[in-house]
Amino acid sequence: MPVLQFPENFVWGVATSAYQIEGAWDEDGRSPSHWDTFAHTPGKTRNGENGDVACDHYHRWPEDIALMASLGIQAYRFSVSWPRILPTGGRKVNEAGLDYYDKLVDGLLERGIRPFITLYHWELPQTLQELGGWPAREVVDHFVALADVVSRRLGDRVKDWITHNEPWCTSMLSHQIGLHAPGWQNWLAALRAAHHVLLSHGLAMPVIRANAPQAEVGIAPNYEPAYPLTRTEADLNAARIWDGYYIRWFNDPLFGRHYPADMVAYYEAQGYLPDGLDFVQANDMATIATPVDFIGVNNYTRQIMSGEISLDQFQTAANPNPNASYTEMNWEVYPNGLYDILNRLHFDYQAPKIYITENGCSYSDGPSSGSRIADTRRIEYFQSYLAGIHKAIGNGVPVAGYFVWSFMDNFEWSLGYSQRFGIVYVDYETQQRLPKDSAFWYGDVIRQNRLEIE
Image (cartoon, rainbow, N blue to C red; front, top):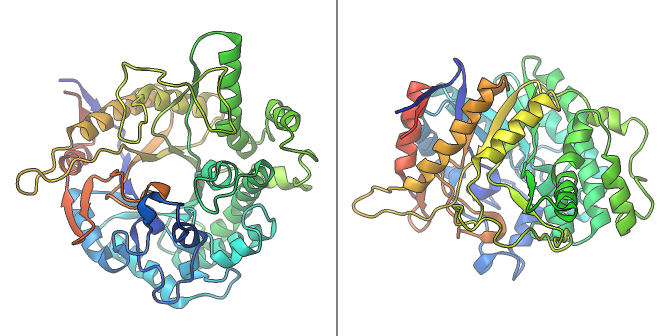
């Protein structure tokens, strides 16, 4: 049985996000977010489901972090709910909301669990959405205020900060494709939103560092590498366009390369940038390229591209790999995609440090006999991806930690409660938590700091 030993001080964690687990959507001074508005709009989510209650983590967090501790979890990546802290944007603090995260951080530290805070995981106060949302430059200053308020309160204890989760989702999935809040389908709005998210990241980093001098600050893009269906020119070009749309449009500015020229030309030719990059102001690109301490990697699958694809319909090659395994999200299990991304971030972009901030899979395994949940496919998924990570580390890639998505089953955005990513099963009727076999398996990996391949 091969044994893969991970580096000393490698960080093993789990991840969640506020709207997906907290519930308490209108309690203790929290205002609606644009996701509350979206999820309460008929037809926007599966079965009309929403995050009003979700996993009730807002009330059950002591139980949840006790469960983390029992499994040996070393770090917990969670997001703050912007409308819980600053209900109308600006700097008018809702003290009850900030106190909640104060208690959560203290509770984690008391149990020896290292907190990783994500400032934005898609919860924009509805009042700011009504000002224009992320396509409006005004929102940038509001985000910097959030970063200042939260890091002032928690920066004495929290040393690991992520500004944004998945900027592609905040911009393209939400404003071009329309599957996420606010549900727009407007290319120019999406590209403006992408720029303002990146700009707010660059402006927030020095603020966090000033308030928490010992902190490390990064960002967590999502990465779905593209591979051509065939070696034809059309398929190769389709893979290049996807790579520019999904990865390089965000990565290149973060690492000081401006927006990729081939994609600017492509968007202009398509009519998506009628006035070019008119939303880019002096010094914006230098601000976006403020050096990060680490880059977060959210990866689940890959894309296979053909010349028939259309970014407008968000289409990829149909049934590209019939012999592959797929999760219940219909995402191909392809660990080599993460391996390729890690090498690219190191050898091409020279990322200083990398955390796998999300990696996981949706399978609906539930209790069978007694309370046992034998989610064997999830364990096999983790094994294959961790083996790829270990291989990348052997190449010199500075991977410093790994966060399972997700700690527990939760609200999966527009898909409602139809998908289960957790290593802990949640009975949404009773709110009972049941660790799956994958949770106990992961605890063993953490304790040994190694992976045994069966």
